Length: 72
Image 1 (cartoon, rainbow, N blue to C red):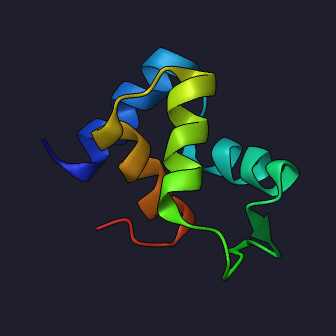
Image 2 (image 1 turned 180 degrees about the horizontal axis):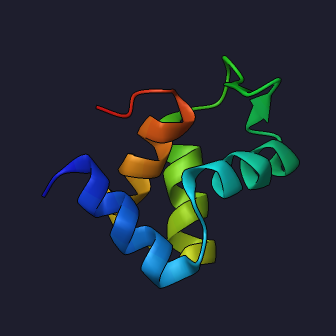
């Protein structure tokens, strides 16, 4: 599955885009000034996405990648 397919499936399931998740992650304290805080681990972010948005691991990792700016 391509990265874009993951993003499309996440948007269909949650109604949120990667930009929406950036805003939510900042409110959760995972991001500051659009960047993941150095002490925040991928597991913290993916666990949050799994619990609050019922995403699977691969989809949660796609959002984590988007938060890190790795979209390709």
